[in-house]
Length: 251
Ligand SMILES: [Zn+2]
Image (tube, rainbow, N blue to C red; front, top):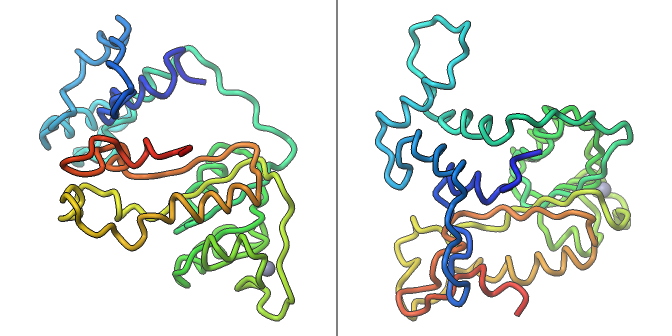
């Protein structure tokens, strides 16, 4: 459990996420006093310097760690998460395995997280076009993954998976406990040179998030679904269209 302000407060502190961004969504609500106090104690993350990140990472170092190694800059967010989660006890892990569906899986990091949290699971299916990543999934999770497909579309059609190429079809049940998918991020990434160019042809994978993922969700009807995207997904569509790709949801 997190603080009463939930994930938006964490995101605002940790990665500068501005809730309510986009056309017609109104002004951002002022941060609660506790959040302002916490934010004031941390360096600004709008343009953090390497020194600031190092200071924050150093603050995360264990009290028993007396090594003189340089701090790991990638861990600068740990104390922020701890601050927001303080005062909440960790719930007992469930006894019944949760059922998981993963798409655009990569290394299937979500399964690693479930392992780390001590939550038992079976993964009905992953989808990943890269054979090396699928091998990585198999090596780490073995029979806990029932089917491995190449694409999200394959998961919709029930075609034979890469583990059972001789089968006539590979079916999975409906309504898994959790579905996690990370559709292609290149169309929305601000690192792409033409991301904001007016009238430029959209990235070839632009509509995957708005077509294949809808088919996938409608077929599998997960109890909970998590979509992972880059922050550019909530940035304006282009220089002349303030509406973000995320604002298109539900049209
Ligand atoms: Zn299969």
